[in-house]
Length: 338
Ligand code: WQD
Image (cartoon, rainbow, N blue to C red; front, side, top):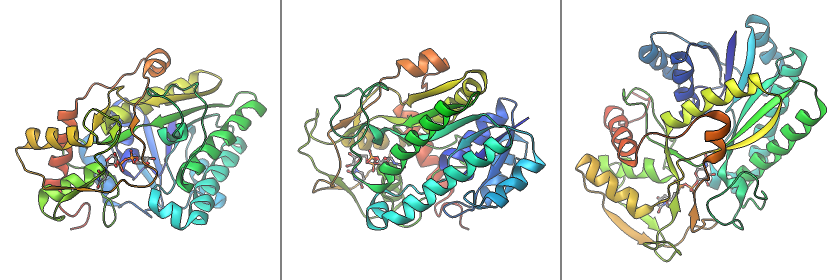
């Protein structure tokens, strides 16, 4: 019995592959490498001693997925495949709707044809929008995404809800990620953004290594303890272990659940910069800039549901996240490129 990871060569998918293999699962990765690198498969093998089966395919194309389901006994799928660049999604929304929805619809149709009844979906805390008070709880109203990327996450949550309602025996867990950072402690896999990073931690590590000149802090007038935006940063290895617990849950329970994966702690931009400097003994040059449109004051998780249903909680600290992000960046200054 195998677990299929669509988009399994990406940042979160590759770390999940490692944790699944460590937990004894057989892993099959389907990825078109549109925002990832084939070397990831070698690195997963190097870390775990076991090579995941790899299909370089577009998950939106059902004929290609049939081959994966014909050649493997897929017990459940973890669906990561999708575009994730928030600013690009506001400029080219159709690219996001087409790809993120097509990959999901094709996967669900093929799963049903093959009687594969358990799915875990990569959702996002962005579904909580900007009207809810923190900490965000799974039963709060969702909606009000400010970009097409976030809208696709909401739409896919709705699709999964309808599919589970209509089908006997189908189960889904929608994992709402907070802010995944860090890297595998081996330094062999990590986040490799294409071009100028949009997210905080890759920008910090590229500044530390000198690829970027300084970090611009997007606003110091937020309603937070030091005026900078507060987020729930979670180590990607903790996040990956949350997926192992979630696929187990989905294969053992019927129905649908949305579950937050966060630490429950909020850290500001300054908290992250200072923790990074302290953990790694480096200096991050900074400048204060304007607010970034769409950013909210605070975003952090209620973590009770994950503890109750999945028996999972985050264990690694902000210091671990800073050390492992820096270790990855230093060992791979150009990501997976030579
Ligand atoms: C974190 C904080 C910024 C960069 C986004 C998406 C979300 C999810 C994860 C995934 C904020 C500040 C950032 C910089 C800064 N998407 N910042 N200078 O916005 O919480 O979440 O990524 O695939 O859906 O919305 O994460 O890392 O971009 O920002 O000051 O150069 O860092 O303002 O307060 P965010 P982030």
